[in-house]
Length: 183
Image 1 (cartoon, rainbow, N blue to C red):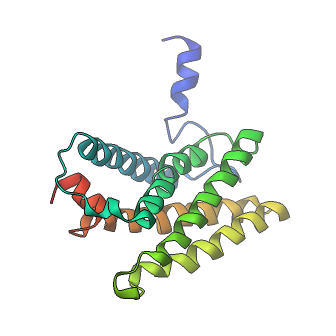
Image 2 (image 1 turned 90 degrees about the horizontal axis):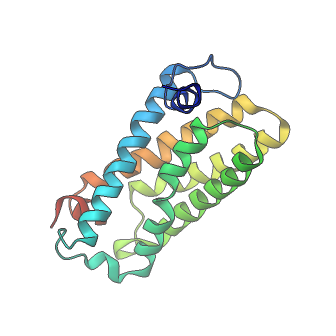
């Protein structure tokens, strides 16, 4: 193995450097890697099954709001994973971070239009959580509070992205459940 290959592989090792203000602790880094990688893989499998016609009928796709919501949330999983693991403070990190926060806000607001019977459900609790966290992510970064900035992002990624994502695959009849497991 060459030194260049070893350097590239360091990116995937949660223990390769000591945690500083911008880095995640080894435990948090491991949790982010495992949850983000598994969720990304499950999303790819579900999309692949649907594209190959193995999911059965997908009546959800008749509703623009559901298609819009899913198309804004799906990139958030691998993009958030990359942002949490990649070097911080670079121009690329800042631009992709703005994109990720924008996608999270758009995704959360789109859920307000996905309501059977025009009622809010328990999942809508993540809308104000996401909006608050998004504001704090930007405010803390501008103030230079990078530790607070990092903590808000990790909380938003694991809390408002992974928890509803898991439920989207578990609850029978939801689009991602049907795409992954069939009808």
